[in-house]
Image 1: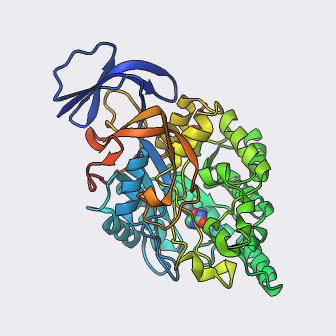
Image 2: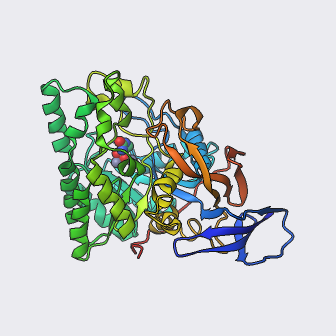
Length: 464
Ligand code: URP
Ligand code: ZN
Ligand code: ZN
């Protein structure tokens, strides 16, 4: 099967140019001006942008918590991803305590295979460190898992500092990438208790139990451990100016630190937790950890994207319905399931608020949402690149189209969106996944074309 895309504006992290693009057998076969080839299908995409398929390196699909399960599974989540232009996700397979990494890997494979609409890979979250877990990390490498997540908060997931340090040394041996959820878990627990003791049970108190210092202290400690282990590391869902200062200080001493942030920390702020007079519990929709922050934090994060201090933007998509799930915390904010939906809307939100406003270039968008992620997590140049030999994962983007985000029209299988009513500029027209047209004119054409992607070693070279 061959496809010729004529006169598109190709956007990569390094440059943009107008060219024809030939797809053959799922791969990009050629790029150039005036390509003549009798393809099975030929489409004129003049006036449209062609981005590399976007990659979301932070999703939680079909994830169980102690009391409930995420609203999106691999079917709805990856269909929503494709409709928004995301062609590959990296989800978090999570070890249950008392169980092995191999079990976690096979549980997540079962959740994803035959169900996934886009390509998928897994980070492995380690929650139980013992000699067997250590030995299994070699097996994970063979299975194409080249990144790990550890938690410094959440009692059922978090690990002690000495354990984190020990795991860092093992990760270094594997040349894998570590990402850590940076919040001081003891402090979070204490601050929650203090709020509840005072009768503060509403969502409004969620951010007060997890102030900026709770994240920044954990970031600082994590970077100290990483420095001791001499391991380049990633910080997932970084949300504050204070944490960015800690990163800056570590980098100034020569440490290699990757930083991810998410659209919610760039576009939403902590005033939303107050809800409305009519619906004071409404703020529960925005409960995630770390919480939404202040407008000045938002500004610092945008500056970080512009200056290159932040390397990637992924979603931390972790959706729970407002009715029946977020409502579990109606008498106690600490029981509200943590997480927000976002897998469908990241590209359009970032294009609208970033590119259309002139804050960042389309090339920077390609870097933040595709190329940097692919390089960091061992997917490049198979993914994240528009060059001969790469998978033909491509997003045809209509830059002038406008839209409005609505829960009523989204594919995400959740009863709200935190971005309800947001006006968007730029929209997905068509999406190719390994050369297959999976979205046409904004409509999903196939729902189980996704495949597992076995990844190579992580890269410790930061962009720029
Ligand atoms: O609130 C969040 N972010 N939930 C998802 C799990 C995590 O911490 O990444
Ligand atoms: Zn986290
Ligand atoms: Zn997460």
